[in-house]
Image 1: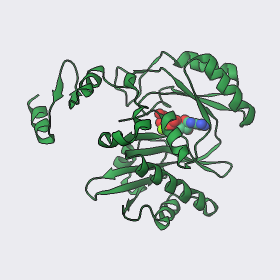
Image 2: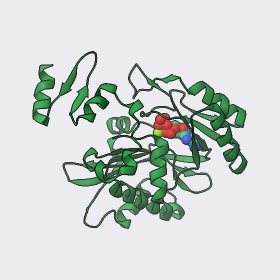
Image 3: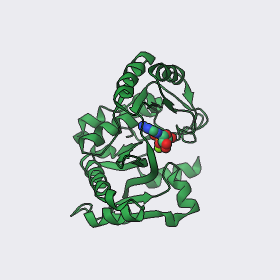
Length: 279
Ligand code: ADP
Ligand code: MG
């Protein structure tokens, strides 16, 4: 199961991961109200971000800076109800039903940090890269040497020396390495405690003020563990899912909607692959 950025940031904050202050808004008036708050006690800039289950929003015009509450309201008016097409949504795009208004951040560097369950090593793998803000797949393709990796022994969890190694590898200033270690440890704790399959911070930002914070957050959860996370299950947004798949999930059916009028309903990985081949 996937959740929105604002929901992921709520979860991360609970575990002590540094995130900017933000508020969800369903109307331009709510966006204006949130902007008023953040413009008053921030650096005079706030950001209005479309909330859809897809990345690439920035490039598609779904993340915009506002310097006044009126500007924030206007951006919200423009985004709400709009179908945003990003490289992750497919050509049909996704309708924006809510926006996240967040305090603006003075960015010094944009990095990448991702945790994922790695099946081959049976461990949680951490990937970090100094090439933040871009697609990690692109970096992996172009310059795989720029992706640093650590594998975490589940018996002892993420070790401080591993986090330090990543921090130094990212070229994080010596004075900030402690903050980076704290950030990674908190993110790892959130990942394990929430039964995540993936948690991606892109960009992880070093601010001009010398802080290390998550400017974006994407989390996916192991569906088989959701029964023990009612709060996370409650974050499911059916609007973001294929209605056919939602209907099937009500009956515990493994159903994957494909293009056009084709869907695949199977009960095993081998059968699924064979069926896909036949389709
Ligand atoms: P997406 O990955 O969907 O494009 P992000 O949340 O990563 O969306 O935002 C895209 C870019 O917008 C970031 O790389 C960053 O440069 C900028 N940005 C996002 N949030 C903020 C913020 N709170 N303050 C300043 N800039 C931001
Ligand atoms: Mg991003």
